[in-house]
Image (cartoon, rainbow over all chains, first blue to last red; front, side, top):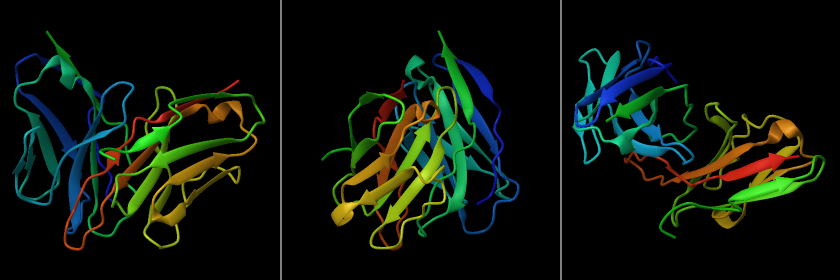
Length: 111
Length: 116
């Protein structure tokens, strides 16, 4: 599975959009981009995933560049409860196997 | 059940004792995963079960660790002769496996193991 690079930490003002970047320059054609988050003292929570098209759900939007070498997770109106570690993971879908979590980005949403 | 259930939520054990951690996945989920997370650290993959296939045990740190999944549902992670470095939160996750579909994992709340 391709490796990802994320900034270790970011701050965001409450109510503003949080844009979390992820680089995955070695991603291959059949690898998806997944995002999870882990709020303190809880298990990780699935957020969203995509292959090449931009995706949106009730939690977030995922923007993937045309060359697929990077992506951005967007939380449109961050709240204090969005403070968490956000993990970007790339892997082949539909073949099972484990997700490998990196160090992620620690997002702090401040009032 | 509605989510992944893990028990116990907290376990304190003496060094050298054996412990068993239990995971009840979401009904119908064929894939089950164990991870552990030491204090302030990232998630470390331990073992993965998929249906009737042989489990992927590549993440187990030593032969003191083992896991089984009975009847394709409940899983038990066993740690023999526990050491202080085994202290961590042990997380279980499950996911469905449907041809042509692609789903994320659902994690449980974990078991916090403290070896004293």
